Length: 175
Image (cartoon, rainbow, N blue to C red; front, top):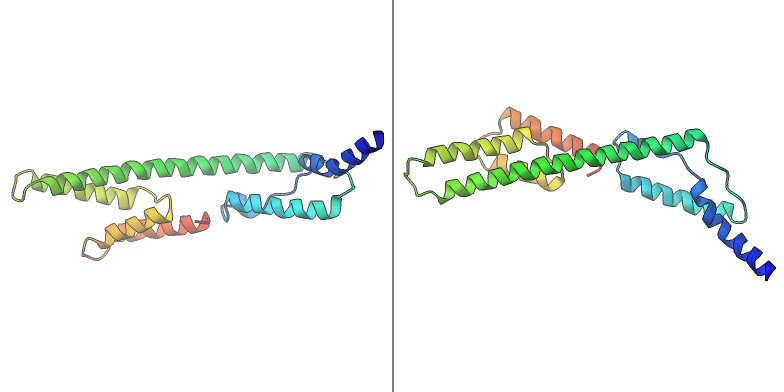
């Protein structure tokens, strides 16, 4: 019985001790050149490497620096996630305002006195959506481009700058 327990513990030990092994995170993730999925894949690669070299051995303990780096990378990832959620919420609110303003304008009969005011509100909501609110995703960026192109006039310089800034930021975030 004792030998069975020893063999079982020897087989399970590399898996159990994996939590004590930490690897340096990719600097690209902390610099916003990747996303959290890259880190998970990176960890899986190191886990496979760990299994191929560490079966039957006790892995080294993490250093204080590695533990501090892991905590820092997790905090940075949480901060980026919160920023993305904030941008998504702002976009959803602005897009809802634009949709409501457009629906109100289109519901008015032609030639009514409120028509010009409703049109102004609609155009202001569109300008706010394009210029002031960052696109949280590629889909939102496509909506911005479609709205800007729907005006049948050349893009305003502010719109072009806002759309280009969103495209660069989304590319840097890995979207």
